[in-house]
Amino acid sequence: MALPWRTIEAVQTEEGRLELRQRGERDFLICVDGRVLMNSVAHRSEQALGTLACAHLKGAAQARVLVGGLGMGFTLKAILDTLPASARIEVAELNPMVETWCRGPLAALTDSAVTDPRVQVKISDVTHRIRRHAVENALEKLDAIILDLYTGPYMHSHKRDDPLFGSIAIRTTKAALKPGGVFAVWGEDYDAGFTKRLKQAGFVTTHHQPRRGGFRHVVYLGTKPAQ
Image (cartoon, rainbow, N blue to C red; front, top):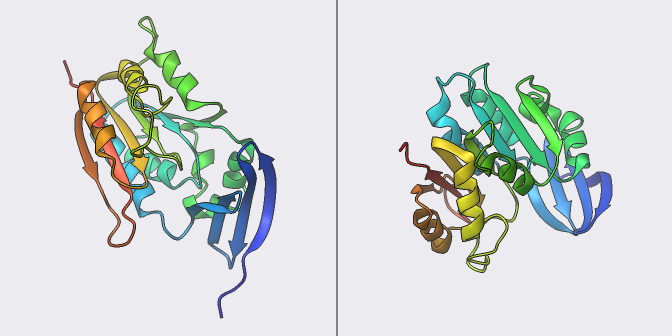
């Protein structure tokens, strides 16, 4: 008989009650308003997101990466496993409780990735962080921008004004990247419109669906041309 889920901790947010649930030693859920956002058992696509987004940086000195969304830390762990010791990774997370969970009950799932010395977590909206690097005189551009958010692009995303996946946001993200930099996005299912907007902005695009069978999550990759 399966063990029952128990709520370890919960906090009220604008989107509803955010909960961390557990059964057994390593089986966790993060839910909001009763909807499951993350599952510690099924994270193949999150690992693929981190690995694919940073594959071009394996030998890069001083690689600089921005991640939107911490989740359970699986994407961050894959990024750390790919990047050299000189890399710096900034994670923008909206809810401080998620960081607390990753430093506490979830830490064993990722070898406490959030405490790696290469990582800095900021309680911030990732769109604000992207805009800092996008301005023309920004001191530092990024090698990769990775969005690991539970609301990925979908067919009803506002094609122009969506703050993350619309055409204006895509152009801003491109401006924040170095030549050859990668914009990587997790999505629940494939959205051809998002790929089209990436191409229109000048990205060279690919997408991957690493999960086998069932509901196939997507990793979108947009590479900024080197010139």
